[in-house]
Length: 174
Image (cartoon, rainbow, N blue to C red):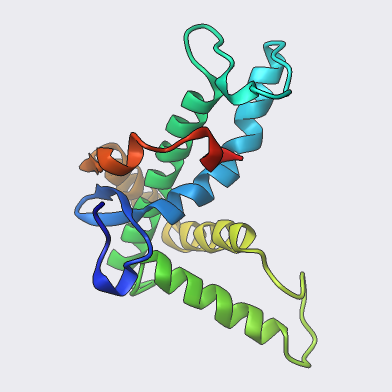
């Protein structure tokens, strides 16, 4: 198995985007973000969300296969937003470990005695969505940046680590 670095040894690489590692943990955040939408799509086709749902084939593809691809595309998009934000000087560190440190710091801040707005603690998936949304908002402040980001997404050099990607199982989406 290939890992990001010794610093991030707990997070295997699922792909590299323009030479920047995308960890399996980041990919799982995208699974979480896209799971309901994929499920809803298949329900609209009349497939029941009962036992075996993720393995039920519809028009040659299972919901699991669809989710795996949609989540990967979303994870790539999110990583490119992070890369772009780093290029623009908005953030320095874009590893998943750095994100987890930001998450912990924010939850510690919220645990203090000051008045806060919003939840007392953020769950990891919610904070990751918020983090990406904030980076996206900060990097797409004008048409020039919007075009540059869209071009970066379109032209990204993506290298999939098939040792990890091909071994994702239905258990990873539950």
